[in-house]
Image 1 (cartoon, rainbow, N blue to C red):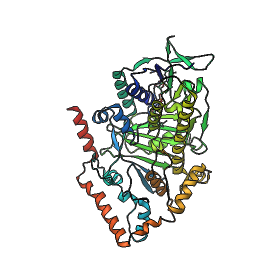
Image 2 (cartoon, protein in one colour):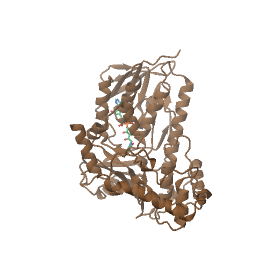
Image 3 (cartoon, helix red, strand yellow):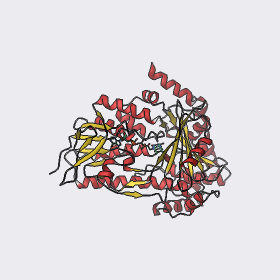
Image 4 (cartoon, rainbow, N blue to C red):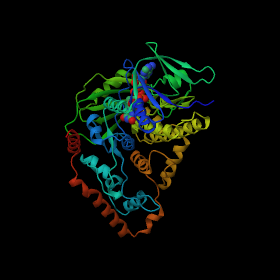
Length: 499
Ligand SMILES: Cc1cc2nc3c(=O)[nH]c(=O)nc-3n(C[C@H](O)[C@H](O)[C@H](O)COP(=O)(O)OP(=O)(O)OC[C@H]3O[C@@H](n4cnc5c(N)ncnc54)[C@H](O)[C@@H]3O)c2cc1C
């Protein structure tokens, strides 16, 4: 007989645990109790500070006040990621959250751009992207224009520790019960295999109907207990380690993340209000941990504020992210390196998916199968997007980059690359997190130049086309002069909340 779900137990109080607790209590707290157990002796992974724009939907659904959020988590605005040395050493490009130009009927803007460039237009894609222009100038304001050509989509950088603390306060206010304790063993139903309760070090037990495993990389419930297995993708994404260190802030806070490629990995810099977050993601086959630490410390441009911390991971995903009465969310569900800041988003979408599939009348197989199917597709689409950054490169300085270029890639990705290279055609897969504009920027940025453009772009005369591009450029550049500095925006919004 199916068991009605009346109590949800969350194991883990990192970003995944507290995001899950907050949203479940907020949206379905009227039908379920929520208890979260975490152990301060284990702590959290302590990284995860760059996000993508859908986080705003998450915050809005929770009813979080943006000014309070920015102040409490020491957040800054993120308009883009700047990829440096990825295509070749010395070259860089931006992957912005905006879409260049304007949307055109039946045919993407970049086809028209290509024709205009063949006719002498010297501007590139990013010159028509307000996100790029603002990121470079260090400007930001919330633009309320109804005209989509002037939209300025953004996300945040925030302090991971402060974010978890912020959500904990928020969740406890809503009625989430928090229990401090180390889970030492787990009771399982002998017949069904379902988890019945968690046993803490002090001998107490926590019972529940549905368990959310947010216990981090080891997956205490989903893997150590239920042994669901892991799809290992490290042959495509061989970086398996990271070293992270905070450093002093810059005088001027940039509104983008930096991703700087090195001989066998890449370095991030995330600007926060009070410090920078820095890290180096690397392949342990190419660097020892000590070499990685040294590389990171030698490539900081402000003073380190702590000892570097090493983290180990395996890229891939849990084969079943929902198994029996356990749903894995966060690092326990799989890991894709933070190149496009997708982990916190994967937490968000897993929570929303779980709520959409919520088994209030009891768990049935079809719900679990559907949930697992959707999460598999989502992970695979992001995986392909990340592989694109590595595979399409022109670096000649190391075996790592040559190997990445020569490796066999998933069929789904090679098809996409071939289609774009031959014809400039680019289509969003169903529900792919990354829109055409994202794929376009990374494909061009990494060095794929399409051989053709769509003939619809020939429907305009040369004069009409160049005139249109002139006008779009002016429209995009016009707001810049009146927009405040990013730091000014942050100061204003933080003050707003204090008053
Ligand atoms: C190097 C690196 C950089 C990253 N950068 C980004 C980024 O820029 N953007 C992004 O979106 N994501 C990023 N991520 C991912 C992001 O950090 C995680 O997705 C996020 O922090 C969620 O972690 P978590 O809550 O799943 O796990 P954790 O933070 O590890 O939390 C696990 C929790 O489980 C508890 N726990 C574990 N075992 C037990 C037990 N036996 N008993 C009781 N409690 C237990 C711990 O105490 C802790 O509270 C990065 C990850 C890494 C490794």
